[in-house]
Image (tube, rainbow, N blue to C red; front, side, top):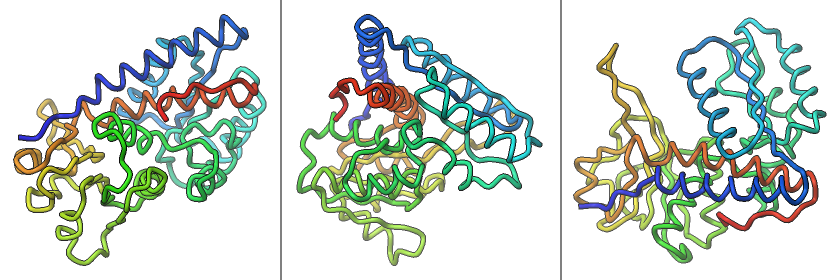
Length: 294
């Protein structure tokens, strides 16, 4: 049976490390990192997620600024708020909760965020820096996946990694991060011929397509490390449950290690958001950056 990779424990370790660095910045430089989260609309799940981000930021000693706007907010008003946050010295990280309601132009909103404060890592300059091997802020979910992989496997050089899914939020940046670690990377997607055969080649398999239970046991190489990024809520009312892109009952009999859903990648995403906010604050004030995670 596969070893379960405990994302909650790794996320707690990262949050503890971030909290220590936040204390160091406060004591040594009088600096308190600040995270601003912007939410449009009244979606209950998004509201819970935004509150969770704010709570975790405060728990590590950061300032949290939450801006909840009506779904009908004009795009110009949203862009004006982002401009204000860009120039606010107390704000070091800006996150706009996606997806945005129609007819807001998501690309325009992302591009309006100061790249130095883009803690989601979605701005074109940060995406380009990652693809080119330069320095930028890295999307939180792929960074969390990489942290889990390195904690479990150590040196990733030479391993064949298959990334299932090519979204710019997870799949593409994940592939770029794995290339940086000297993996041989295959990026599979909806047009890939025989995806099960492709996935079976991977010493590492990262599943990020948003299709519940897509990855079965015969998609996985024996002993592979499987990172399940998918998260879908199934059911109605009080009987809902969260499931991933991987069928754990089948895959756990083949894989060497597997992240659970929930409790795997999800906690790491928020922890890496705090990490990115810390990094952004250090860079904006030209202070030494913490070295963990790599």
